[in-house]
Image 1 (spheres, rainbow, N blue to C red):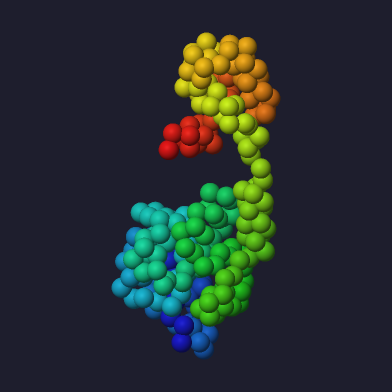
Image 2: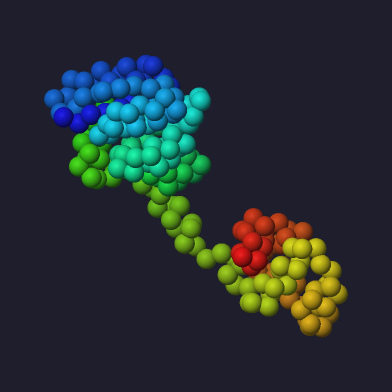
Length: 214
Protein backbone atom coordinates (compact mmCIF):
# COMPACT_ATOMS: atom_id res chain seq x y z
CA UNK A 1 0.00 0.00 0.00
CA UNK A 2 1.41 3.41 -1.02
CA UNK A 3 0.94 5.87 1.84
CA UNK A 4 0.29 9.44 0.64
CA UNK A 5 0.32 12.83 2.36
CA UNK A 6 -1.63 15.71 0.74
CA UNK A 7 -0.39 19.27 1.22
CA UNK A 8 -2.66 21.87 -0.39
CA UNK A 9 -4.35 25.01 0.89
CA UNK A 10 -7.59 24.39 -1.00
CA UNK A 11 -9.92 22.12 0.91
CA UNK A 12 -11.90 21.18 -2.19
CA UNK A 13 -8.71 20.11 -3.99
CA UNK A 14 -7.70 17.95 -1.03
CA UNK A 15 -11.19 16.49 -0.86
CA UNK A 16 -11.33 15.71 -4.57
CA UNK A 17 -7.88 14.15 -4.80
CA UNK A 18 -8.30 12.26 -1.53
CA UNK A 19 -11.69 10.87 -2.56
CA UNK A 20 -10.25 9.47 -5.78
CA UNK A 21 -7.10 8.07 -4.21
CA UNK A 22 -8.94 6.38 -1.35
CA UNK A 23 -10.78 4.10 -3.77
CA UNK A 24 -7.52 2.95 -5.34
CA UNK A 25 -6.63 -0.54 -4.08
CA UNK A 26 -2.92 0.27 -3.72
CA UNK A 27 -3.03 3.85 -2.35
CA UNK A 28 -3.88 5.14 1.13
CA UNK A 29 -4.10 8.82 2.15
CA UNK A 30 -2.66 8.97 5.66
CA UNK A 31 -2.70 12.71 6.24
CA UNK A 32 -3.59 16.18 4.94
CA UNK A 33 -2.19 19.65 5.56
CA UNK A 34 -3.35 23.09 4.46
CA UNK A 35 0.04 24.84 4.39
CA UNK A 36 3.70 24.06 3.91
CA UNK A 37 4.68 24.30 7.56
CA UNK A 38 1.97 21.92 8.74
CA UNK A 39 2.87 19.69 5.79
CA UNK A 40 6.53 19.66 6.78
CA UNK A 41 5.65 18.68 10.36
CA UNK A 42 3.38 15.87 9.19
CA UNK A 43 5.89 14.63 6.63
CA UNK A 44 8.72 14.17 9.13
CA UNK A 45 6.29 12.62 11.63
CA UNK A 46 4.39 10.24 9.34
CA UNK A 47 7.13 9.46 6.79
CA UNK A 48 4.67 8.83 3.92
CA UNK A 49 5.77 7.02 0.78
CA UNK A 50 4.65 9.95 -1.39
CA UNK A 51 3.95 13.62 -0.67
CA UNK A 52 1.66 15.59 -2.98
CA UNK A 53 2.78 19.22 -2.61
CA UNK A 54 1.04 22.40 -3.72
CA UNK A 55 3.32 25.41 -4.30
CA UNK A 56 1.44 28.60 -3.42
CA UNK A 57 0.25 28.44 0.19
CA UNK A 58 0.08 30.68 3.23
CA UNK A 59 2.42 30.34 6.23
CA UNK A 60 5.01 28.44 4.14
CA UNK A 61 5.01 27.81 0.40
CA UNK A 62 5.64 24.49 -1.26
CA UNK A 63 9.20 25.22 -2.32
CA UNK A 64 10.35 26.07 1.21
CA UNK A 65 8.43 23.12 2.61
CA UNK A 66 10.08 20.82 0.06
CA UNK A 67 13.52 22.16 1.01
CA UNK A 68 12.89 21.58 4.71
CA UNK A 69 11.47 18.10 4.21
CA UNK A 70 14.40 17.05 2.03
CA UNK A 71 16.90 18.49 4.52
CA UNK A 72 15.28 16.59 7.39
CA UNK A 73 14.41 13.47 5.41
CA UNK A 74 16.43 13.08 2.16
CA UNK A 75 14.60 9.88 1.20
CA UNK A 76 11.28 11.72 0.80
CA UNK A 77 9.53 11.45 -2.55
CA UNK A 78 7.68 14.66 -3.32
CA UNK A 79 5.37 15.28 -6.26
CA UNK A 80 4.57 18.91 -7.01
CA UNK A 81 0.93 19.30 -8.05
CA UNK A 82 0.29 22.91 -8.99
CA UNK A 83 -1.36 25.33 -11.40
CA UNK A 84 1.90 27.21 -12.00
CA UNK A 85 4.37 26.65 -14.80
CA UNK A 86 6.56 29.77 -14.62
CA UNK A 87 10.34 29.63 -14.24
CA UNK A 88 10.19 30.98 -10.68
CA UNK A 89 8.21 27.91 -9.63
CA UNK A 90 9.40 24.99 -11.80
CA UNK A 91 13.16 25.27 -11.44
CA UNK A 92 13.30 26.05 -7.67
CA UNK A 93 10.90 23.18 -6.97
CA UNK A 94 13.02 20.69 -8.89
CA UNK A 95 16.21 22.07 -7.34
CA UNK A 96 14.64 21.75 -3.89
CA UNK A 97 14.37 18.01 -4.43
CA UNK A 98 10.92 17.31 -5.86
CA UNK A 99 10.92 14.03 -7.80
CA UNK A 100 7.96 14.78 -10.05
CA UNK A 101 6.08 17.89 -11.20
CA UNK A 102 2.59 17.78 -12.67
CA UNK A 103 -0.16 20.32 -13.20
CA UNK A 104 -3.53 20.42 -11.46
CA UNK A 105 -5.11 20.17 -14.88
CA UNK A 106 -3.92 16.55 -14.90
CA UNK A 107 -6.66 13.97 -14.50
CA UNK A 108 -7.10 12.16 -11.19
CA UNK A 109 -5.96 9.00 -12.96
CA UNK A 110 -2.77 10.75 -14.11
CA UNK A 111 -2.07 11.85 -10.54
CA UNK A 112 -2.57 8.31 -9.26
CA UNK A 113 -0.25 6.95 -11.94
CA UNK A 114 2.34 9.61 -11.07
CA UNK A 115 2.17 8.44 -7.47
CA UNK A 116 2.79 4.84 -8.51
CA UNK A 117 5.65 5.66 -10.87
CA UNK A 118 7.35 8.03 -8.43
CA UNK A 119 7.00 5.44 -5.67
CA UNK A 120 8.81 2.96 -7.89
CA UNK A 121 11.70 5.38 -8.32
CA UNK A 122 10.64 7.12 -11.52
CA UNK A 123 10.26 10.80 -12.24
CA UNK A 124 7.06 12.12 -13.77
CA UNK A 125 6.97 15.45 -15.56
CA UNK A 126 3.92 16.64 -17.44
CA UNK A 127 4.59 17.47 -21.11
CA UNK A 128 4.37 21.20 -20.39
CA UNK A 129 6.89 20.85 -17.56
CA UNK A 130 9.24 18.80 -19.73
CA UNK A 131 9.17 21.50 -22.40
CA UNK A 132 9.91 24.14 -19.78
CA UNK A 133 12.88 22.18 -18.44
CA UNK A 134 14.27 21.63 -21.95
CA UNK A 135 13.94 25.35 -22.68
CA UNK A 136 15.65 26.20 -19.40
CA UNK A 137 18.54 23.80 -20.05
CA UNK A 138 19.03 25.22 -23.54
CA UNK A 139 19.04 28.75 -22.16
CA UNK A 140 21.49 27.78 -19.44
CA UNK A 141 23.86 26.19 -21.95
CA UNK A 142 23.67 29.09 -24.37
CA UNK A 143 26.98 31.00 -24.55
CA UNK A 144 26.96 34.25 -22.55
CA UNK A 145 27.95 37.54 -24.14
CA UNK A 146 30.75 38.05 -21.62
CA UNK A 147 32.32 34.74 -22.66
CA UNK A 148 33.67 36.68 -25.66
CA UNK A 149 35.67 39.07 -23.48
CA UNK A 150 39.44 38.68 -23.37
CA UNK A 151 41.18 38.53 -20.00
CA UNK A 152 42.28 42.15 -20.36
CA UNK A 153 38.79 43.28 -21.35
CA UNK A 154 37.45 41.46 -18.31
CA UNK A 155 39.89 43.37 -16.12
CA UNK A 156 38.82 46.64 -17.70
CA UNK A 157 35.17 45.75 -17.14
CA UNK A 158 35.93 45.21 -13.45
CA UNK A 159 37.35 48.71 -13.25
CA UNK A 160 34.43 50.19 -15.19
CA UNK A 161 31.99 48.51 -12.80
CA UNK A 162 33.89 50.02 -9.85
CA UNK A 163 33.42 53.48 -11.31
CA UNK A 164 36.98 54.07 -12.47
CA UNK A 165 37.60 56.74 -15.11
CA UNK A 166 39.59 55.85 -18.22
CA UNK A 167 42.69 57.47 -16.73
CA UNK A 168 42.26 55.57 -13.46
CA UNK A 169 41.90 52.33 -15.41
CA UNK A 170 45.07 53.12 -17.34
CA UNK A 171 46.94 53.76 -14.09
CA UNK A 172 45.52 50.66 -12.43
CA UNK A 173 46.40 48.29 -15.29
CA UNK A 174 49.55 50.06 -16.48
CA UNK A 175 48.27 50.55 -20.01
CA UNK A 176 47.84 53.63 -22.19
CA UNK A 177 44.72 55.79 -22.20
CA UNK A 178 44.21 54.97 -25.87
CA UNK A 179 44.32 51.25 -25.11
CA UNK A 180 41.73 51.70 -22.36
CA UNK A 181 39.39 53.47 -24.75
CA UNK A 182 39.79 50.66 -27.26
CA UNK A 183 39.03 48.02 -24.62
CA UNK A 184 35.98 49.91 -23.37
CA UNK A 185 34.66 50.20 -26.92
CA UNK A 186 35.18 46.47 -27.49
CA UNK A 187 33.45 45.65 -24.19
CA UNK A 188 30.37 47.72 -25.05
CA UNK A 189 30.19 46.07 -28.45
CA UNK A 190 30.58 42.51 -27.14
CA UNK A 191 28.09 42.99 -24.32
CA UNK A 192 25.68 44.69 -26.71
CA UNK A 193 25.24 47.71 -24.45
CA UNK A 194 25.40 51.39 -25.30
CA UNK A 195 27.30 52.90 -22.38
CA UNK A 196 29.40 52.24 -19.28
CA UNK A 197 26.39 52.30 -16.96
CA UNK A 198 24.72 49.47 -18.86
CA UNK A 199 28.00 47.56 -18.89
CA UNK A 200 28.19 47.94 -15.11
CA UNK A 201 24.61 46.73 -14.71
CA UNK A 202 25.41 43.73 -16.92
CA UNK A 203 28.48 42.92 -14.83
CA UNK A 204 26.54 42.89 -11.57
CA UNK A 205 23.57 41.02 -13.03
CA UNK A 206 25.90 38.21 -14.11
CA UNK A 207 27.94 38.22 -10.88
CA UNK A 208 31.07 39.10 -12.78
CA UNK A 209 32.40 41.33 -10.04
CA UNK A 210 32.14 38.67 -7.34
CA UNK A 211 33.49 36.07 -9.75
CA UNK A 212 36.64 38.08 -10.35
CA UNK A 213 37.20 38.89 -6.70
CA UNK A 214 36.56 35.40 -5.31
